[in-house]
Image (tube, rainbow, N blue to C red):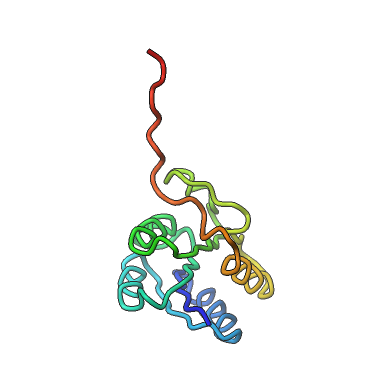
Length: 140
């Protein structure tokens, strides 16, 4: 079964998601801040196959976490969850997040489990991550 890095600063949300995921047989590593996510990833880098992250967290945001972790593990799959700004903030980091890779809070337990399964089984590893590609000036 897969190991999931779960990043959310809302303790009750994180705890509920952890229980759901562990109940389905996933191993869950938790973090509540940007720095805690980096530390948790470093300690479990080879096991973690999926990042489930709130977009808005202390010390950074889920988009920044995804970019940093994908630099170290390009095949890392990503699912964003958010009840606030949603995936819109990710546009500022140069990538679009499809509905497959985003789940709006609040969500039903079955929605989270279905989305995790969908992302893990998808041929697309994650949303296109990284800074925007520079535009080249073709006019002369």
